[in-house]
Image (cartoon, rainbow, N blue to C red; front, top):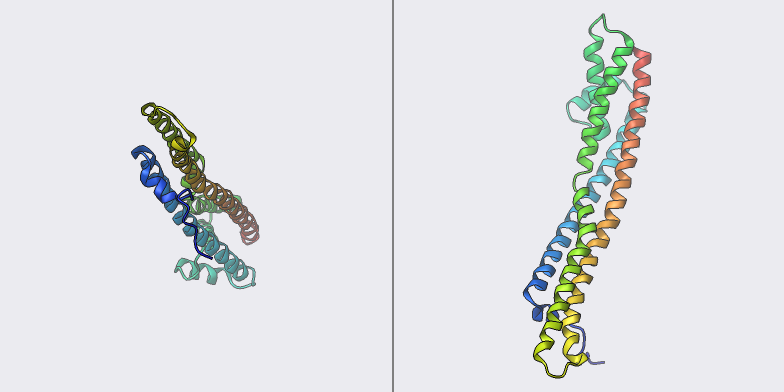
Length: 226
């Protein structure tokens, strides 16, 4: 079978080369935005996967029944990575610092450790949420940028009919086709960004619940030791 040589076959590249400068600018902008969003998506996917693996590894080590002081020393030296390990380190550090003061009540010890872990959790979640606002912006704005290119292209196509005595569908179709490509590329940039944002936001919420549950359980252990 030989490839089709019909001149009416859809050639997106040819349409874009023949498009007006504003439409070409819109398409280039959307392609750059799409590349940037895919870069963020890949980085965020690897980051969240690593965060879940590190949290699972730390939980296994924490609940293995080992010495908390030994675990604290390893986290303090940076030998145990992960958000949960850093939350544990901040709570344990605050607890030990106040525990050395004989006049501090047990309730104050626990409350200080809770505040330290809560602040550490917020920092960790803030790190995990980096890039999500960009994906949300791409998902919400890209279709409108593509629609702007489409409207401009259609206006340009119909304006060109003023110089034609007898307007036909064949004379206006290329202009409309090149304009609609801008909307298609806008959707191509927006849809993956929206899906990725929703998925990553769910993972971040799950990590937040995981850190909160760990903080409460760890505070119960500290309360018994206080």
